[in-house]
Image (cartoon, rainbow, N blue to C red; front, side, top):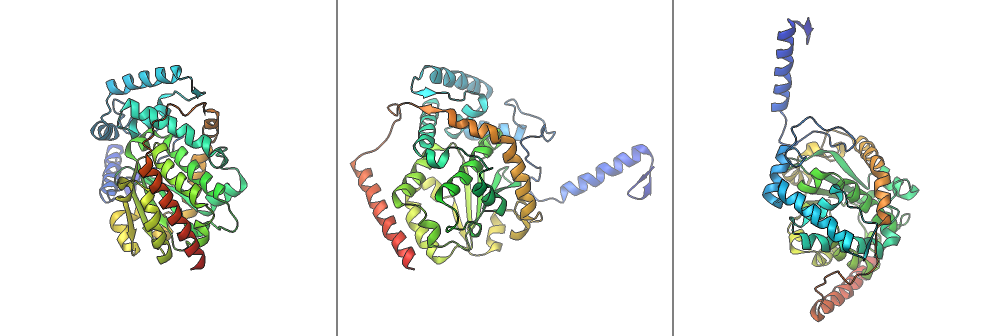
Length: 359
C-alpha cells in the first residue's frame, strides 16, 4: 500500500498518516481553526456535562458559575416566572434562548429576568429598526455580501467568534440607519444561537479607514444615544475585545464622545491600533480575511457566513412574535443627575455631529 508516495503496510500507513496529522497540528498557532458551522453535527470533540465541549464547560463553570444543578434549577425557575408574568406574550422558553440571559448575568436569575424584559422592550421600542431581521431584504443582503459586517469561520485563541467590519462597504448616501441596524442585529442574533458563543463571547475587529461624517449623521443624536445605552443593557452578548484599525482623526474625536455612553467595562476592552502589525499582536491573523493578513479571502468568509445566517433565518424572524404588554416590571436606575447627564450627552453629540458635517 502506498501513502504519500511511499510503500507501507496498512498498519504502517495508518501510523504514518497519524504522525503527519500530529505534526501539522503542532505547527499551528494557538488559534482554534475548527470551523464553527451551526448546522453541523459537531467537531467530534468530547462534550462536557452541560452539553458543551469539555473546555467550554470549564469556562462556563469558572467564569459564569454554571454547573448542571444551577443550570437546571435556574431554567426551571425562569420558565415558571415567564409563565406567570402576564406582561410577557409568546416568549421563547427553550434552553438555548433562556441560557443566553442567564449566562450574561452569571446565573443571577433576577438580573437575567431584567435583561429579558429589557431585550423584548428594546426590540419592541425600536421595531422599525429591529423587527423583520431578514437577510434577504435586498439592501441588507447587499451590505452583508459586500463585507460591511460578517463573521470569521474560525474561532480565535480564546475560543471566540470574530466579528469583522469594513466601514468602507457602507455607503451612507445609499443605505439607511435601518439597514445598518438590521445587519448588526442579524449578526448578533445568529451568533447568540450558538451556546458555545454564549459562554466564550465575541471579539470585534473593525476596519474604519473610510469612515466619514455622513456615517454618523444618518442617526439623530437622540436615537443614537438611546440605542447605544439601551443596546448594551438589553442584548445578552459578552463583548470581550474590540479592535479598531485605520481610524481617521475625525472619527477619533467622535469616538471620545460616544465612548462616554458606554460602560467602563466596554470602554476598557476597546483598542485602537496604529498599524496592522499592532493588531496582529492581539488578534491572530489566521482568523482574519486575507485582505487583513489572513489566508482565507473575504469573499469565501462571507459565503460561509451567509450559509450560517440562512440556516437560522426562520428562527430569527420568529423573534418578532414576542411582546411586552407593560414595562412596569423593568427596574431602572434613573434619577435627576442621570437625566441631566443624558441631556448633556445629547447636546454634546448634536454639536459633534454639526462639527463633523463642517469638517
